[in-house]
Image (cartoon, rainbow, N blue to C red; front, side, top):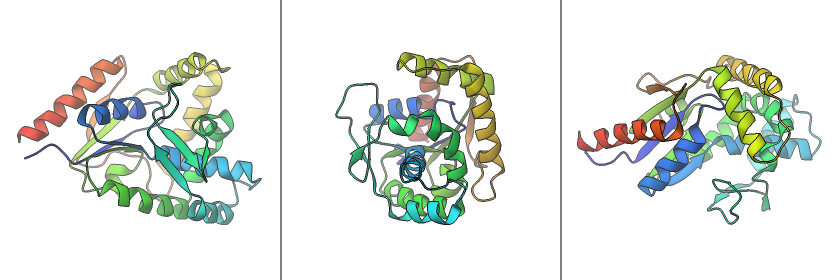
Length: 229
């Protein structure tokens, strides 16, 4: 058996999906695709256009029409890729506290998820991809060759988000981030359509107390074991 063509990495916010996914994609020379940026872009678009986040119909329509592109980074500022929304660079705008607070509401809408999942699936089925999200292994690409579910305690994940923002020179409050992540977990895991959960055949990795290199080594070993089967 060859190397897994489609690798799905799911997990809650702050579990390390983006960082680990980028390292793995670079190592394998695969496409890096963090699907969460698409939901963030739709959320940002709704905010910019003054659309009420609670207006499911308008937000869903927006998701179907907004153009979201991912490109190789053109600026060395810590970004994993360029995120373009209707041609505009919104790479860091989609990481704002306001988007953080609202993205789980937007991503819970079935028609939003359907519209974006279809785009994600089309890209993923081309192969040689490491795709991160919350429902990749369960909904978007259930046929993925290797499914990983990264997890960590709420406190660990809040601490990671806190340090990320401090390193970017942004203001950060640990207690606020903790509350925000707790609410995101609640919304993501209880939504009716594509709730956050490991696929039945996912390999669950608890990253509490592990550094990036240790988690990457574990996933790389799983990838190589798949190769030799």
